[in-house]
Image (cartoon, rainbow, N blue to C red; front, side):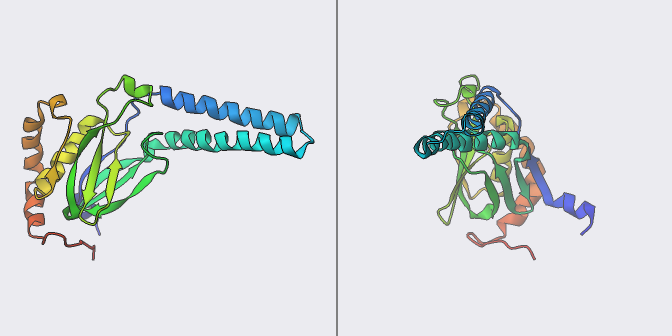
Length: 216
């Protein structure tokens, strides 16, 4: 396949943007504290009592795993993306601490989407989100019952463009959002995106509902 053909398949691709540093800094500080305490108690103090040693390992290793894992994920958030390529939605999404622990990665056909939309991320457990009060992510509900919540590190404006592109490509899916008041210019932006995706939308409407698309 030529480079030109590859580019024609890619309809949209959005990358993440760091919108806050407070949560990351806290995770990094806790990771350093836990690693330091582990080194001091195990390699410097060298406790002889096995009970003390086991206790130190339990109270030290667990926080290291939690905060170290969290810090590593936030260092690698730049690998995230949401793409609409041909008739597929592809994604890699790093969750916030309170929206999940595992990095989400996968793909699914657009015509398997039943409902989707932008939802506001709760800001109860994030100091960063007290500043970014309307930070959103996208939720997809598929016909087979699966749900995906993705895009925590992607800008709201990019999430809007993704949703409106899907709406124009596959209007059968129900688009819902609780952020309409935050974007009074949605109608104007929708017209702009509709012009770009008109041809793709016509092609996709020919696909029978519920059919799983496989690349040949």
